Image (cartoon, rainbow, N blue to C red):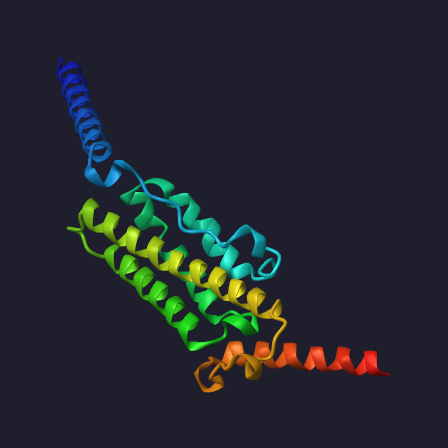
Amino acid sequence: MKNILFLITLGIFFSCNKKKEENTQKQDTTSPLSEIKSYKAAEKVNPIFLKEIENWQELKAVDEFLSRFQKVSSNEILSNALELKELVVSLKDSVKPPLFDNDSFITRINILHNETLRLVDMTFIPAITADEVSMQTKNIINAFSAITSKVTSILLKERFEDEMEFDVQFIGLDSTNIDSISRISIHKKSVQRKDKMSIKQN
């Protein structure tokens, strides 16, 4: 008789524990942090310039990683925060093509780095909300978009300057107001034209 009562009691105990686990799992799946949200894709570098950055693996790695964030829950974002931070650190420390090794571009990468650090910090806050994670995710996507947009604008500028067939002194440009990238490009173009003229004269 005692054995029967013991088995019944044991059965009730495990049954209660199972229901408790099911209720906990149900609460987890309905938590705001588990809700799937959609985010806009980060801006891409203009396709016509993909050849120029094809070897910049660190930039491509961050771009591909952020593509995972288009439809994702806050919990998934938080669980990927550390890996994203490491990828951004690699981008920050990477050997950049000469055109992008300037203060303006580096500042944009630093902003992205700071935003990813804030996301990592959120993983240690027990009371973090889905809205806070969502806002920070948008900040990161916007920060990376600022980088890719700058890549496109720098390469567009270089292409325009490479196609120029005039000397600044003939059109009255104030060379003191031309930035270093433009000055280098214009000088390079000028030297090339002089070389072509020299060859023709000879």
